[in-house]
Amino acid sequence: MTPPLLSVENLVVEYPVKNGVYRAVDDVSFTVDQGQTLAVVGESGCGKSTIARSLVRLLKPTSGKIKLDGVDIAGMRERELRPLRSKIQMVFQDPYGSLDPHQTAQEIVGEPLRQRGVTSRNDRHKEAARLIDMVGLPATALERRPAEFSGGQRQRIGIARALASQPELLVADEPTSALDVSVQAQVLRLLGELQETTGVTYLFISHNLGVVREISEQVMVMSKGRIVESGPTSQVLASPAEAYTRTLRAAALDPSTIHGRKPRAVLRTAERVA
Image (cartoon, rainbow, N blue to C red; front, side, top):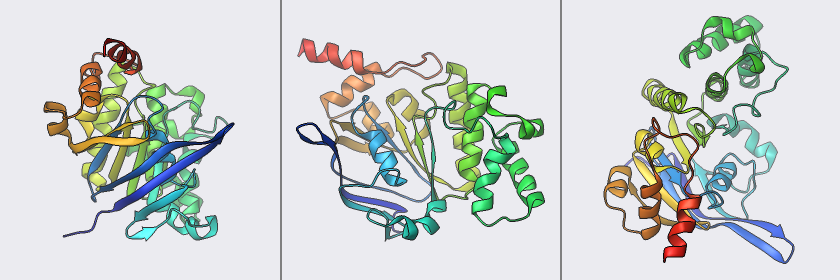
């Protein structure tokens, strides 16, 4: 059998707080196969975004292993980690705050190319143009700055920037939650098409099982820093084993009919009924 592209073992992430430490991620283990999509779903504060930031090493885990292509990056120093950063990239939730407002789209997408060793300005321009076209934006977008784009267009630029590093794994942290309804569906469709074209592997963070249904083969449901249920997305959605997952499913509506809904209020209602 082919080993998984990503293997996370007993991951723990703790933050210092006034009276000790807060365990945001509590002994989490999972794998993601090459070319597949694993969705991590749960209410705000469940630890899913902390996992995402740990995987790309914006956070250093307290303990555990993060093996990318068999190499444990969890405890690496920055100098050791730098050559591996191109293998794993991130698309952020906020398409407004994640792009440098002073750079053009060409400069935003071209920076990872320069880091990758594409020294010729002409070559960077050509590759940036190819990537911009790949994410469905016109060539005229190259010379425009983020303020001149809609939220969905900015997210497409963020995706192009991530793809510029030729990553094996793309971590998408709630990439559609800040977008209008119709744009959410467009971005999900784009991500699916890009996976078919490039073979990139996704770890997709979401609060909504309705969105997860559109993008993933496998799903992992989290609550209070721990995994409460996991399995094939179709199976978990059709017959969830855990009450928590059933509550999330009840809150999950099709992304083409809802904007910005999160299950927190529904969960509080369920807790009061229980």
